[in-house]
Amino acid sequence: MTSMILPPKQPAARRFVFVAMVLACVVLSPLAVLSGYGLDVITEIMIFAIVAVSLNLILGYGGMVSFGHAAFFGLGAYATVLISTRYDVSPWLGLAGGVGTATAAAIVIGAFCVRLGGVGFFMMSLAFAQLLNSGAIKWRPLTGGSDGVGGLLRPELFGFDLSDAGPMYLFTAAGLVGVLLFMRMVIASPFGHAMVGTRESSLRMDAIGYQTRRIRLAAFAVSGAIAGLGGALYAFYNGFVSPDALSFGMSGMILLMVILGGKGSLLGPVLGAGLFLSVKNIVSTHTSHWLLIVGCIFVACVMVCPDGILGFGKRLFRSGERR
Amino acid sequence: MLRLENISKAFGSLVVSNSVTLDVTAGQRHTIIGPNGAGKTTLINQIGGQLSPDSGKIFLHGQEITRLSAPLRARAGLARTFQKNTLFQALSVFENVRLGAQAAHGRTYDLFRSWRSDTGVLAQAEQAIEQMNLGRIAAQPVGKLSYGDLRQVEVAVALATSPTVLLLDEPTSGLSPSETAQMIDVLRALPREISILMIEHDMEVVFSIADHITVLYYGEVIASGAPRNVADDPRVQEVYLGAPQ
Ligand SMILES: Nc1ncnc2c1ncn2[C@@H]1O[C@H](COP(=O)(O)OP(=O)(O)OP(=O)(O)O)[C@@H](O)[C@H]1O
Ligand SMILES: [Mg+2]
Image (cartoon, rainbow over all chains, first blue to last red; front, side, top):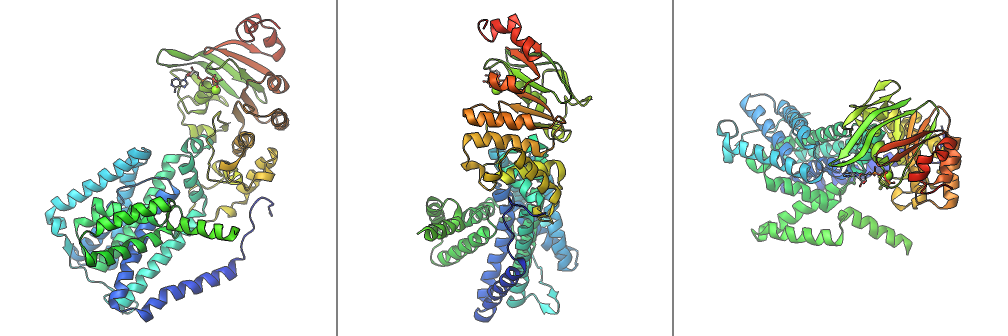
């Protein structure tokens, strides 16, 4: 069926080849240019980009402002470390367990949060993350308390040792690209559109036959799973996890990355994670008050471009076209 | 098709529905009229499931739906429009209507396929757009539309769910005379497989569409019947029309 109403599709094959080539260049060039330390820095950025992308799913598309996303990131990291070290199994099983634990927690926590809208949702998500954070501090025998737990050794993949910066970088890059492709698919799916409808008006969605709570819960679970993957990768990256991963500050940082970069766009959170961690890395070598400076940058950004860097860029581009 | 039995509802001491009993028969064009604050919207909200009545029963196709949630009522064939705009502001007209069609015909929990792939949903949405003559603005974001266009999109979203009973809350309020005439035309053109329960203030609209009129006054049904009979009813003339005409 051809349609007069729908916008025409872009020629898919040529675009795909183009995007794949650009992606390959972007991913491979740091390997040629950067040292091990440089690759580590980018690896960390990519891990947080995954987490920011996961929050963006419910925040940007689902309209749910979560101040507790560290819960799923932290749980993913803790479960990965604990399963791999305590039970002496492959870290790959740990990674799967990390994602599974985060997903299960997201279903349970989500069931409470999605009943509430706006501020209620915000406070509830925060409360659960705080609960997990104090649990990690208090339950010393399991979690090592505020010292955290470590001892995870990165495994091998296809004969490459992930302990080396290069393979770990490539592995994380593959993870980020996979997550972005998945997100792209979800956003364009019937489910993605239902999520946006729920963000725009849950009253209307209800009235036309959508069970909005279920939609919100499903989105929350998917988001928690991806955040858990980010946490598991972080556990691989660091070999160690402490209650900081579940902290208020971590939740805030993830939220800032999304808002800074631009919520409701595919790549905004990736940009946000890159900018945030770059500023943090640069500023924190000069002063311990890095958070203050990041805060100022954030305020300035929100004043200049409330729709994030990506939104700001798009607006610039459009006004340039008009001239 | 739709039956209300002794529906009562009060907000505190304000009784907004007072033992309302009402029948919408198959294919009927049933209009509720009544002065401002008579409780018309509140009644529609109770039928749609946005509010629940204090007492009384609601039946749809013979099944009781009094305790059913709004989305499940919608899936059972009930669609409604809102007096106040609650459309998806950031989305285009087409996307608004398409979401209506997806609710009834689509696989909402499918994450792994493009929305474009569901041709049944697309066809349903396009049909609703054509029924309401919205093709010219289909690609525009709803947030930028004129008020008159919004009222039509309201109806298109409801129609896209392929309802058997359509509830319309003042579809012509705020429309210009020519827009009102257009709305009358499209509503008259709707197939009789759809029963309509409509709230309307404009008497011209009422008499050109309705085959049954119910008059609501302070939450109470004071008259119900064929348009001519209701218009001649002395009580209606007294309380609603103000004076005999
Ligand atoms: N949620 C509520 N809480 C308290 N009172 C309400 C609520 N909703 C409506 N009312 C009151 O109930 C009465 C009936 O309101 P309703 O909106 O049903 O009237 P209506 O017949 O649709 O009027 P209009 O013609 O102005 O649309 C009004 O007096 C209104 O102020
Ligand atoms: Mg009203």
